[in-house]
Image (cartoon, rainbow, N blue to C red; front, side, top):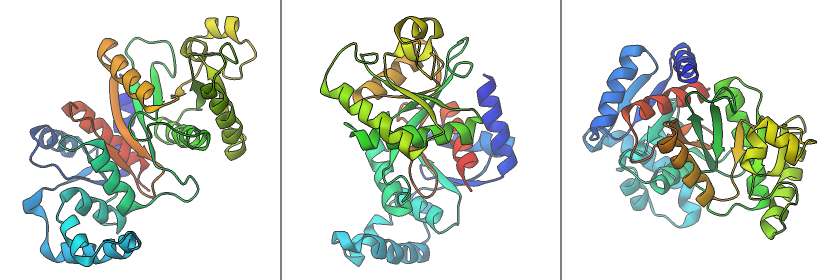
Length: 309
């Protein structure tokens, strides 16, 4: 897949340091070996036995200052920093690494909490969300078979404001990582009022908010998925759509739809799925599905390296 080659090549040019805090998982170790061999990134493998006691103390003090408003104690902070996920996140926060990738042996909520609590949320976006890079073989839709699917991992029932933020964040990742012009579609079971419900109202509100956040962004909604990605169908269902059936960033109305859709495409279309890539934070982090392959870990590391500044 050309898009995967592009991502790995871009990562090689960045020479970034990425932490994998799940050394016990054989898939992680195999991925790390390949990444180092190919020069995709510098890898730090972490597990319980690789944590430094002095650094735990230092990171715990910083973490306590970040989270004490939530009622944690210094002892709570020290216990938390004995977890490799939080240790990796704090290493990234203080600049000792450029990003971290985890989730092969942890749930998405575990990884997301560590990332949000330690890295902090970007004030310009104000929410953390996630997306997947999907690469479908022999596909003429999207960007030669490449799509961004969002949110598939974090926000169960996004508000209009959250949907707008998801759209803008995902479009930014499409530009940054894939180097493409994003065309965003807010997906629904309805196309421009063909059905009426509160869900459609929410999407229309999100569309207006996203336009305000980024007036130059190409986006439309609400759209059924065929009207979003198939030009011939778009011409029939909504010929005035600015996206014109060429969407490459698909924003799902809720987490059920997003998560189900990415896994169906991954399994039935034999697509590559990299993510969840966590959006809206001050530094990059990628989650992994616990059913991930070695190749998917490699892809997430490459994307995280590209996103690192």
